Image (cartoon, rainbow, N blue to C red; front, side, top):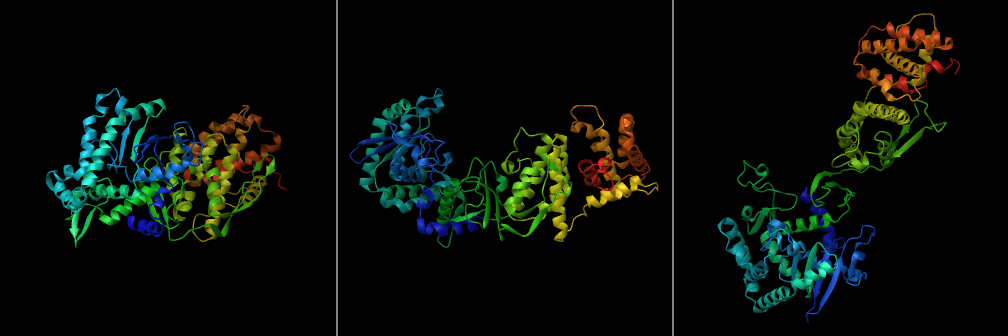
Length: 573
C-alpha cells in the first residue's frame, strides 16, 4: 500500500517539494512570536475561525488586524520545528519543538493547578543543551544508544561549530529572559493553547536542524533498524503502532520481526506523504488520485484504516437502470413517473434517500449516529460495506447481494416507523434493481409481474370455480386481505403496529391464523359490495395447505400490502 501511494505522491512532490505539503498546512491555535535578528519581537495570534474558508485569514496581530501574508512563513518554520509525537521528544514532554531555532510550550505548562503539568525551568536549559551535540541520545544504553551514536557521528562537524554553539546559548538566554512576558501576553489575549517562538533565520537552517532530529527519530523504533549494502532500513513510524503493548504486530516466525521495513530516505518521504494527507479533506476518499481509495481515521486524519486499488472508475452507466413505479404509487395526489438512473452518483443519492432515509452517506464510516433506532442502525452496519464497495470502489458484487438479502428489510424498517410512502418507494427500488440484475444476467430470483398477478387474482376471486393458490399467489393475497381488513379499523390513526402480527408470523399456517383472527374481528364491517370477493379470498387462503417460511416470501406479502388493493379494483380497470 505505502509504496503504491508514495509513487503517485512523488510525481507531484518532485515538482513542488515541501510547498506541496505546506499549501494546506494548518497552524495550531496559539501565540506566535517572531524574534528578528536584531532581537525585535513581532506577535501574532492564530485562532482558527470555522466560518471562514480561507484559514490564513485567521492569523492576526495583537490589534486584531488580519495578517495572512505571514501565514506561509510561519507554516514553514512550524513544520520544520514540530516533533513527530510526544514519545519522540528532545528533552521534556512539555517542550514540543525539535531544534534550537524555535521554542514550543503550552500555556497550561505555566498556569496549571496540577504541579506535574507545570514546566520546570531547568528543563528549558536541558532542552537547549541537548542541541549542542545530542550527547543525551548518544549516551543512551543498549542497542538504541549504539544505533543513535552511529548516526549522529555523521554530524560531528556541525556539533563542533562554535558559531552554532553560540547561537544555541543566545537563543536559550533570550527564551529564559522573555518566556514569562510571552506567557503574560498570551493570557492577556485569551490564548489558551500554544506559545510558539521562532528565531528569524533563513528557512534552510530550520531544514538542516530538523534533519538531525529525523535522522534518529524517523523510524518507529531505531533498535529495529539494520544495515543492508550500506543502506539503513528501519520500521516505518507512519500508520504503524508497533510497541511493547502491541507484540501481536511482530512477525514471530521471521528473523526480522519488524512487520514493515523501509529505507531511511523512503521513511522520510513516507512521513512527508502522511503530513500532506493529514491536511486533505476527510470527506475526499481519493486524495492521492483516482487510482486509490483511502479512508482515514476521523480524528487522526493521517492514519489510513481502509485502502483499495481501483482498476476501474464508474461514472455513467453503460446500461441505465429503469426505476419503475411497480406499485403505482401516488405522491401528493400525483402518480410517480417511471425514471432512469444513468450514473453511479445518481444511484447513490437515490439509495441513500429511499432505502436509508438519508442516513447512509453520513454514516458510511465510524460509529452510526447514536440517535437512530437500534434495528435501523444495525441494518446500516450490516449493509454499508457493500455500499462503500460499489459507490466508492466501483465493485457491484456485494451491492446486489445486499439487495437480494436485505432489500426487504429497508421496506420493513419504513413500515415499522409509519413511513408507508417510503416503504412503497423502497419496494419499487428493490424490484427495479432486481429486474436490472436479471436483465443483465447477474442472476437473482424472478420478480413478480404485479399487473399480471392482479388480473389473475381478480379472475380467481370472481370465479365460481375453485382453483388452488400457488405459493406466490398465496402470500400476495394474504398481504391484500391483511391490508383490507386493517383498513376496517375504527382507529383514527392506523399505525404499523397493526401490521406487526402478520410480519412476526414465521410460517404460512401461522399467517393464516392471524388473518382468520382479524377477519373475525372486522367481518361485521364488511359491506355486501366486497363481501363475496373477500369471502372467496378468505376461502382460498384457508384452503392453502403448505407451510413455507414467511421470510422467504416476504416480498410477495409486502407487494400485496403496499400495491393497489384488489377489493377496491373493478375487473374492467
